[in-house]
Length: 280
Image (tube, rainbow, N blue to C red; front, side, top):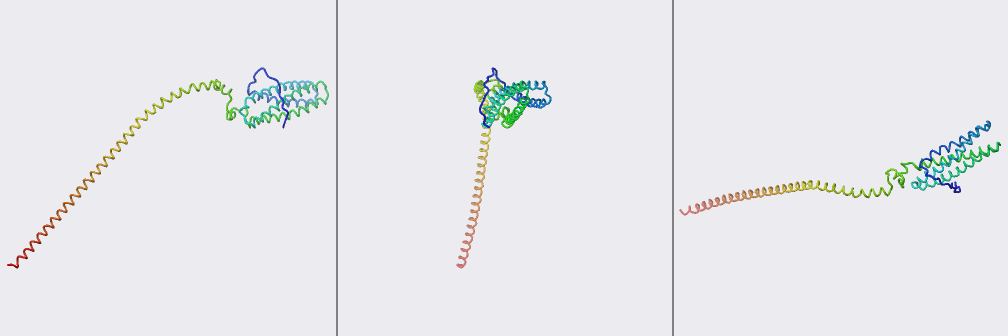
C-alpha cells in the first residue's frame, strides 16, 4: 500500500520517554470500539447523555492518538539503528499509517460535534459509518505493530542486543553509568595495570618451571650414566669371557701337542729296537 508521505509538524518541548507507546496503544484501540457501541445503542435510545459520553470519549481519543504518535516516534527512533532493512521498512509504514490515523481521529471528533449540532439521523449515520471504517484501519495498524514486536523484536531488549548494532550508547550509559568515551578512557587506564599484573605472574610461572626442568635434566643425566655403566660392565664381562675361552683353547692345544709328541717318540724307539735285533 503506497500512501503519500505526511507528518505532524509539531515539536514537543520535552523529550518523550521510551517504552510509553504500549500504554497509549491499548487505549487507542479500545476507545473507538466503545464509542461505536455507544452510538449503535443510542440509535433507538436517543439519549443525550449517551451522546455526550461519546463526545467525551472522542476528545480523550484525540489526546490518546497524539500520545501514541509521539511515543511511537520516540520508540522507533530508539530502535531504528538496530533493525534490519526489512524491519525498518515496516516501521516506516507503521509510522505513516499512524500519522493518518491521528488526522482521521481529529476529523471524526469534528464530525461528532457536527452530528450533535445538526441533530439529524443522516449526520449520526455518517459518523457511525466513518467510525466503522476507522476501526478497521486501526486494527490493521495494531496487527502491524504486533508484527514489529513479535517478528522483528522492536524494543525487545534481548533481541535488540542480539542485532548487529548491539546496544545503543544510551543503554551503555545506563548500564555502566558512564558515556562511551568515558568507558574507553577507563579501559585505557586499566590496560597498563593489567599488563603490569600479568608480568609478575609470568615471572613467577617461569621461576616455578625452572626447578622442574632442572630435576628432569638431572634424572635424564642419571639415567644416561647408569646406561653407560651398564654398557661398560657388559663389555668387561664379554672381554673376560673371551680371554677365558682363549686360555682354555690354548691349554687344550698344548696338551694335544704334548700327547702327539710322546706318541711319536715311542714309535721311533720301537722302530730302533726292531732294527737292532737282526744284527745280533
